[in-house]
Length: 453
Image (tube, rainbow, N blue to C red):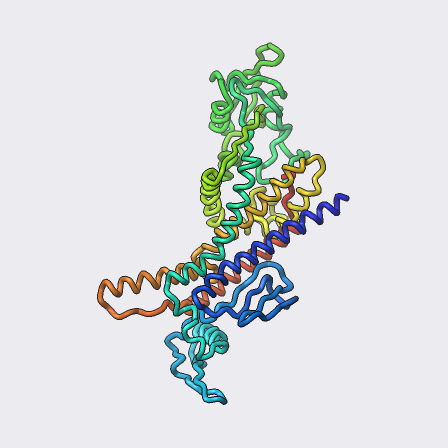
């Protein structure tokens, strides 16, 4: 039965992501059609076509590899300076056909010209007023921003439902003098994907000092301790120095001596940035604080997520390199490393099939996982680099800026922004994204992260 539940979790996650991809592409297609742009294809997935149907001028379908999707909007690339006007021909019926000239010099020029040729081979004279590059800059921004905005709206709807019903749950240390809830037997690096001690792991300073669950810490190196925040600051600031710990056990005042060790630990539960700090190896007794909220609370939480995601995007190549090193066995996989859709599916399967996990919490975790993926997909696509949506948005904004400046300076209209000139960069970025995607998928298969992490 566990295997059935695991498969069910994977299928739920996969269907939700495919639906999100489909809605993302609809976000591009609907405003594109509304602005009169010609859309010839709408597909979910890549690779061989599994199913398709022609409806009007648009072919709708599904492809075999469910790792994305696309909408074919006609006229994304302008003709360019090498000139469609240099090749004006006529078909058998006498209609004028405009094509890109094939002659060029240089590898990059050839690359750009071939892309223009592939684009303009599908364009007829009747499409002249329906080309995407001819649309007003703000229409281009709306079309390209609508896709990732749909993912952010999906994330907002999911998080709103979670926050309004289940809320956020945070374990807060009990007030007053620190009462120890648990003592680590050994020192396990935070980045290690495990919870059990190994023979090679050093004994934790807390265990070495003889501390036990239920002990009340009263002093640290002669400083009276009144709460966990104060104690945490004292421990972290002690680095690997000597530590004399006063504590109360069964009404008796005792003390233990040890030396804290330096470990890489996150700043807080919400900020996973690692810093080298002093480490003792004790956990506080806590109580759960539940906070519920509506749309404004959801926006506040997503604002925090935005800051965290931007930081994650800035360090993504480094994090992926860390996954590659974990695959090679250089070091264990970091608990905060990124995961692919494969890793998300694995987590969904483990969630649904987990024993002793309340159904409500399973549903919340699964919904949050799907919402988190949508949020990241939306944010990632706003990165201002081609071939991502943000690259096209940046091109449209640059077009608006330089045309506006030309009008202010009473200079000739500089014309449309030629995104084709950035295709070499776009191909390089696409290749990097492909490599990172493959590394994450292999990592999720070879050195996966688990819920127990």
